[in-house]
Image (tube, rainbow, N blue to C red; front, side, top):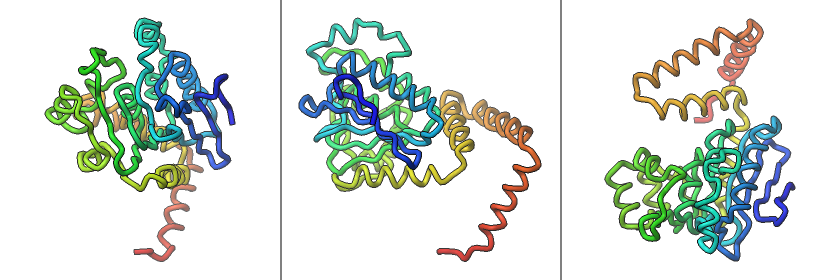
Length: 262
């Protein structure tokens, strides 16, 4: 297990290709200091470069996922070098090629909400709450909450969540397509690992390419996104060798001989 100097960001590389990043400041509901943000950014950059890691699970210790920025050091955080991509955890999560699963329990508040939105898949415990308090405390969003949430749950609902600082529960989030699975409190990591294991079983190359084309396509209108998919598909198949096509055909043939489980 790799740890930050103060053990506030924990990184555990498991032998099955799954890495778990834990925000570890439970006494402060995992609120983020500037140093923690830097450590978290470096953790994701390192895991992205580690070829043994295929999926990353992000979670928080104790009873909260992340309660946002530690406001006792707000000026240091908000007036710090926030444009430095190397020390920005959300930018590093967005750049990460590996799928990121958010294992959420308790509260994901403001910056914690934005970190959750930087995950590719969200598993949340029953009763968990996602809360945007930017408007309540006079904090301007800078990690994507003003833009991402409306694209996921719809503009009107996102306006209500953000302008009223009303909690979005895990259960409502699941209905809106924001949360993938809602499970019992003690089952969050177990379910996250099940999803991670299902990803690990697939072609690593295709998983990375698929995540990339989905996320890059979301930045475009549908017409250009479809063109992007076709262009990358053509490039992929042009680069495949006869041996790769043969293995693909053998795999498909082998699957067709297995009895159906349905």
